[in-house]
Length: 294
Image 1 (tube, rainbow, N blue to C red):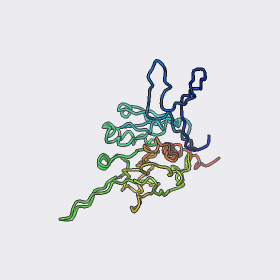
Image 2: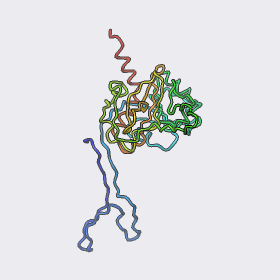
Image 3: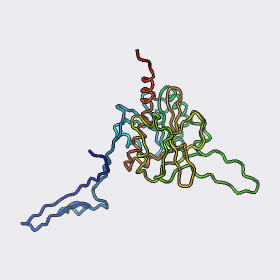
Image 4: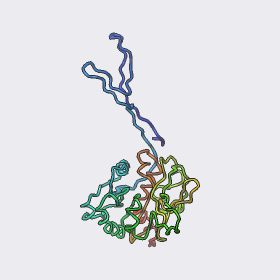
């Protein structure tokens, strides 16, 4: 199938019947009337949108997912053939996490899943033993003072004390509201931007509503930022996709609004998220390439 956005429609058709005097009709928003039942109506035509695009997905990719709200990301990943297991409180506390290639923390999960805080050290241990942890956006009051990441990272650092008599200064939310804002690839050859899908500026076309929100604004030098972007007239923000090696694994934080892009079938969002989930495979490939041949 060619790449693109396609619309699939369904309808009921009644053929003409000269003997009964019936004309040919097509029914797109209601069922054909039956003599024993009233006509059933609905407000939208029977149609759906199909998105076709190229995305490489490693075979047998297995992901654990910690969600706090009804969000579209797990279902979107399953449509790519990725095995997704939702992790409840018992799984976070006791399950062997080593079977997952990656674990994803859903938006606002540290705020809305109280057991997640107590399981955070287990998640960091999972990373240090070779796992990949992808943390999606969290709000600053549920993040900044708790030190969940392996190294210091803040969404909204404390403001300096106001001068006497000065009004209170409010810090703007670190987000990119312009969905068409330019995106710079800071490390275009980094494995997270090349494996298994080569990410280019084209992958940020067609995004909807916003680029992302609750970006990190201060983070330890051990983290590597991969993208820079800004709203018109504003300075670049580089905390929208940040990662660090931790032990044998990879810790990733992203404020990019994948949860808005997936329902709209944005190809670049799918391709980039698969790369994040494939970090352990990227590490294995790099290690194999570095081994001396005999």
